[in-house]
Length: 396
Image (cartoon, rainbow, N blue to C red; front, side, top):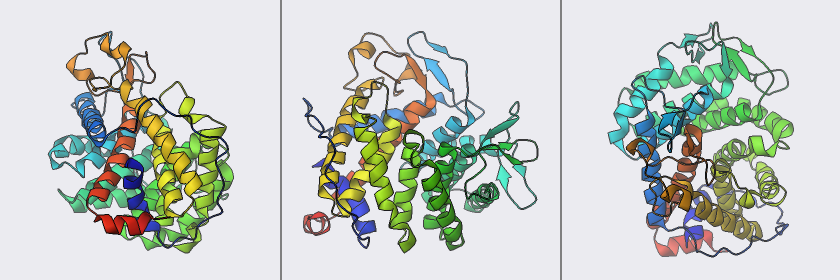
């Protein structure tokens, strides 16, 4: 079953964690008319999402931010943080498909082209016409550079230097309260503005993954301080902090550093709120962003022996995937609104924000495609592990 497949990846990583207290779900997830999404459906959705990102890329390397596929016209607007998120997703896809190298290198070059450098070695993104930008843009470009390095192709020394510079800039944004300044000035790189639950979560993930996959043990103490401050400052702002905070905390728990193990309960408390109070499964708008946190939360619960939560969360994952895949242009399960129109080739693979909203925003496709990839990646891990090993790992 799909739930068992996803359990493996985090179970293998987190086997040493002490299980938190168990808590029965506050309310059950109603039964759906269809079963779990198949691996074939996930594979198709992933390929379509990546194809849309590639088609949406401009010659400069950034992406068409919003596109009305029914009217076949670009919609005005832009957001640098969301542009960086699309670059990250494309770089993560590149880890699986080296043929994406030209598109990924164009994307990373866009963010690096007019970069600034601070006196302490920090590197930051500067885009003409932007006076200031969110710290999350730096975090997401750092994640994209990290994904490029993990793919293991190209000029690794250059991209390692870029990543180190972006990480230094994130560390330079720390405030006395442990959180990060939410913005930075594109002229000079000064850190400004109040902390953001999005920005702090994105930065926490970038720092956590860099520490874990680049052997940056020097980031351990700064990560402990930021995680502590972010949980105190933002865990109650669940809708804003949830997906980034959850992905980051799961990475930190998986690092094996014992000071991060207690954050399993933070992940569960936030996920309980998302499913019960926020009624995530019943939202009418696209909730792919939250699925990015829900999938690792489900497997964290399973790996730590919290079977009540694991089943509750996994059922919610299945339901959300079944609701979200019909919002994708060109998918086999596309809904009636999509089926009633003929898309231009540039729309294929794009994902709507709701059932009848024809505006395809780049971040909506990025979030959902990443969530689908999370599901696929763990399914792949399941296929690579002998059945007896799987049973040993995930047995209650």
